[in-house]
Every structure is written in structure tokens, then in C-alpha cells.
Image 1 (tube, rainbow, N blue to C red):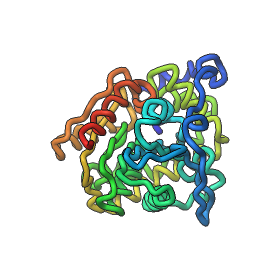
Image 2: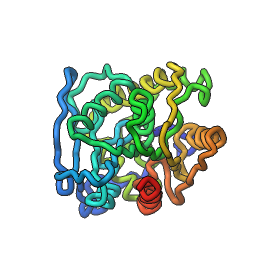
Image 3: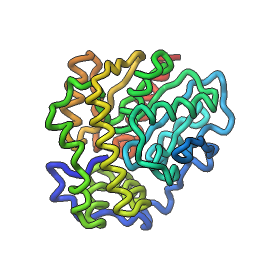
Image 4: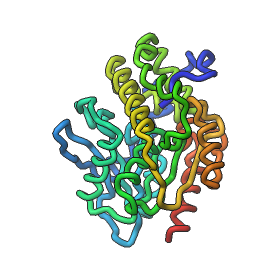
Length: 303
């Protein structure tokens, strides 16, 4: 999720109405292609969606949406991969249908909840696909449970290691709540939708997901997520990626310093960034064909 950017001022209008014709023919694919299930925790219930019948001969694609987004973010990937891989996606704690859920979770909590869900499903041969905050969750998962992921796709996310971030960037992440609250809700939704996606479909979907929250609920969730990210980075753990991985980033991603982080990630790992054309921070929505092709390529390499 991204709100403020250098282009924010020109994106305060023009949000497609979430109820207009653009999304009328776009169905949430999860209820028809996947089975909805629940994972209980002391803080609340987590809703997730999984292939109705798992095929033990196929890998598991685990789709992890970004901060404030829900499982619908990966509808175009679910459509493409259902039946070709075992698929699982979730509404992370405090997101979407995984509410109410206390805003006390940490990055490690997210990773542990995910581990519990995967164990509940008997999932193996995991390929983690994380967009933005979902990519950080995937890295925390690999740090806590080394050797369990067979592959990782970072979609408009960034490395979790401390060396990539300046002190002032971490401090800023901990103090965003008042900035979010200062925007009128309609303007905040417009900014969030337009700054995250370049396409009408992506913008309408992001706006629809945002409007599932009240303004206060959204701002508190976003602020908590950014603090969680800052705390996870400041912990300065190795967070080594111990499997083949792919770095994807929209060519028009203006979320913070995402492009700078990804270029540094490329330089330090030798793993080239694959720039997704005509796409913003939610590149899997803006150009699903390119993102799906990259995931397909990784799966073929792991076969």
C-alpha cells in the first residue's frame, strides 16, 4: 500500500467508482475456484482460501497481499493458476474478512500464523508470492522456517535487511498515522487507488478494498503495518532467502523508495529486477500477464 508520492498532487481526482461498470463484470474468483476456510487464533479468526482439492503432485502457490489489501488483489493470479498448482491466499490479520482482529501482531506473528495455516492444509513445495507487505511477510517466514520455501516471488516489495534502510526512513515509518488522518476520506481513497495502480481495473479494485474499512479503521491498520515493518527491519536479522527467487517491480511504482531498494537488492544479490511495463505498485493487477509469466517461469525452473 502506498499513499504519498511525488505524484500525489495530480491524483486527487478521478477514482473510478467501485460500483460502476468497471468492476460489475469482475467477480471475486476465490469463492468459485477456492474453498474458504478459517484459522483460529487467540486474537481473532483468519480467513483464507485454498484449492478445493489439493493435488500432491503439484506445488503450492501462496499469495500474500500487501498492507490494507485483501485476497482479491490476486484474483488474476488465482484465475491463471487454479488447477495448475495448489493455490492458497488469505486476508491477513486485521484485513478484509479477517476482522475483528487485535492490532497487536508483529511481522513474526504474521509468519507464524501463515505457517500454522500451511500446516493445517498439509501444504508443501511452497512458492511464496508476496506483494509489498506480503513480500516482507514471506521473508520473515523464510527467516523463521528455513528450508520450507521452494521459491519466492517479490511483487513490488523490498528486502527486509536493515542495511537497505536509513535511520530517518525507519523513523518516518513509525509516524504516519496523523498524515493519513489529515486527509478527507474520499481524497485518501482516491490517492490510495491512483498511486498504487496505473490501470482502471487496478484503481477500481484498490478503491473497493479500501472502502471496506472506515477511515479510522484504515488509518490505524496502515499506521500499525508501517510500525511493524520498521520494527522488523530494525531487528537486523539476516533474513536470508534460501531458495530461488524473482524480483518484480512495476516500471511506474512510486511507492516510497521501492525502485531504489530493488536496484540495491539486484546489486547485492546478482538477481536482476524484472521491471513490469505499464504497471504501478500493484503490478500484478496492472499487468497480470507479465507477472503470471514470471511466476510460470519460476515454476518451470523448479519442476
